Image (cartoon, rainbow, N blue to C red; front, side, top):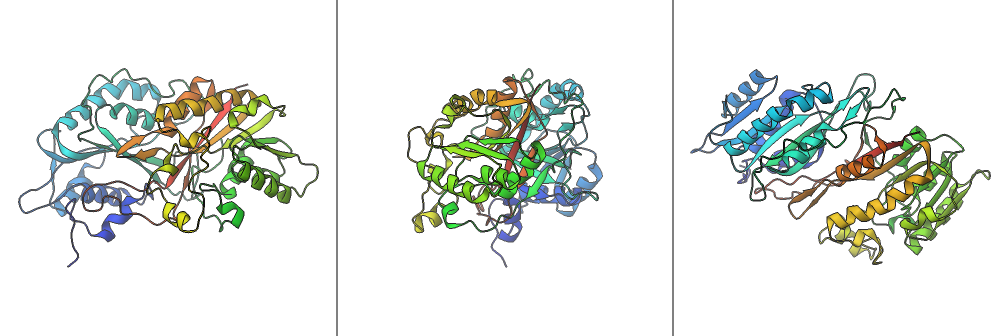
Length: 456
């Protein structure tokens, strides 16, 4: 008989698939059953008590009966797990804001009823229509003042017309909050402002790019492997084709080995950028020279700090796409792929340069320094032009740092218009059994592709 763990009595084969931070949605039965069995533990002495609110009460009642759990009617008593299914609940931002106090009050009751280190799960979609409002982000940040935000899983829905169709809202979030020693238990959060309170799309043409993409890039060439965190040209292609036209200008202030520029040149755009590392800048320049088969196209990559980019005499840019360091995660012991790269004698981080943003240890300082790159750079973009930032939310030492959400909020304050998010989902990486048998820490295999428009 397989050895069971102490967390939920599941075997490793049942545990590991739930470790991935994105999943393809099948149906509510599958969604509910996996959450129910993962976050509750049945013993001879204890029958788990579960609270639920949503439109599928009969389904969850049947699942609880099948798995010998008790579904309670009220958020009281000793709860092992609570789940709120808020999908399709809010049609407008006004609807969300009106009902937000009542929703938060319910979550506070759940907090009091949950056992220590137990989970509240909320399934929720964004509001996408003539306006776009990231209510999932807002709710996560607000409730993060009461619970500990443990994770956000991305549910990817397939449709008959397009398996990855975008602004039809064919994805939703599963947010996970835990009552634990880091929880603040505060209830003074009713007036927390929405990340994007006013973000009307104003009748502009909606992007047609798909809302989630599984990218399986080819094996990297020897000079590309030298970079510890290269993103694939196949990903960049999607956005350059969506947000620019042939002959226009594309820029990346953190060029790395030139993925953005190579993609731009191959798609008939002019390609420009800066790169702090002399070695990577040289590799990028060489790759661009090889990719520039059209002699009418221009390209240039300067070896300098991204913060100096606006000081150069660049042409006005139609589109900027970039991926910043994911904070200082490459300097963390046990970072993904570190052991393999070390064994091959490859560089583990971007550089040891004190100007390298990837070497900043304090999170707030890192975000501020990143904005010191982006804010002046916005003047380089033509009115009506676009900006894409590929980034992750960060898990570090048991805490969640919403880097993608914080950057979005800061850029909205600079007057940019936030467009519906797009996800790069990875399924070609081995799942690590973090916390197996004791606690749940998912493998973050989704990247936010944040898209912004500079208003005319």
